[in-house]
Image (spheres, helix red, strand yellow):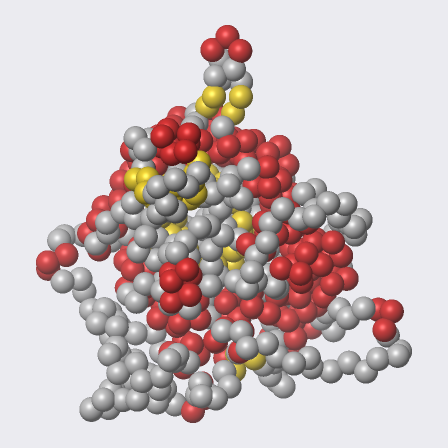
Length: 504
């Protein structure tokens, strides 16, 4: 029988937490970081004296409003019963997952934190160490080397003191079990100028990862917190002077303010540029896996398919709900597709699809997995959990999430995350039932890069704020036209390491 190892409950935190996360369920995450799997259930002290039923549902987004709907008839449960020669239990759900070419013990990974103050200090090192013990991959975000350097000289001019990036890698390697997990390092425009991937690929410190196939490089095209913009951080005057040679620095807080805004460039991408970048990565770093991170743009489906066709081992989609870093308020509130809509536009993935955006508990994770994701990322939730308990907070949070995943997946009569499908979900009105036929609320202007899945009615159709994530996902896989001649010649890359769709 599968066990659920979890760190012992944490004592009350002696000092006030350093991080806050307005608009995010911070207190629930902190409770899980302290209590682990116990936080999945109501307070056991109330058992026998309180009647339990549904709580008032929070408004949430489209993904949160979907219901997880087990069927009555469960043929896969019968198959499991025959295989086990007993009634299956939730402990029989196998959460081991292929994540972008790596093997992970859970369908989770640690999202990129980047060079922000919250994401590149001791909390990030603690998070990397705990992620290693969990056996899940870690993504190290952009601009770590241009901002913090790669090595710092020790006594006598040596390099005994490692940079923030290498501190995270070393913490991960010290704790990682054999054969699971991996390190993913992003590169953006400024990173490319610093030749970050070349530094890492030739560094003996990364040899254990290369020899075991647990190193990946991720090309970053954008992020959910600020689609279309590059990274932004707040720096003091001294740091601004240092970084001005590599980054744009703006005095947006006033000419006499002690802080400035450091801006990175977002990079420029077309179909051909993306294909060529992926070819470059595969040719120059053949032992490293190839990942691509996409912001939630309106052509997200076309961009994801372009990346998979060019040989990407994983495509990461950052929903508009995601983000741990600094961004203008108008971007945080008004720019980018919600994660549910991004997954709808991608449809059935042809390679490994990873999703981030507001994930902290099992229900949201299951819904993203059912809509095509092979694994989900923890960003703000991971940092808050580690802030609550630097030694075991992330492990307890992941333990609670893993228990919920097993409970939910088994309730659907399935026993791997890869078996989840769109018909495991139901969207309440005004989002149509997936069994009711074509979506009457579909966007009247279909994605020009994707063939329609059903005939379009003539004339304008009503426009709604959001469309059903399920109706499109339920539809047959679209037939794609070949690339236009203007895109330039492009031989298809090899099949991604994870094969078509999601791998168990």
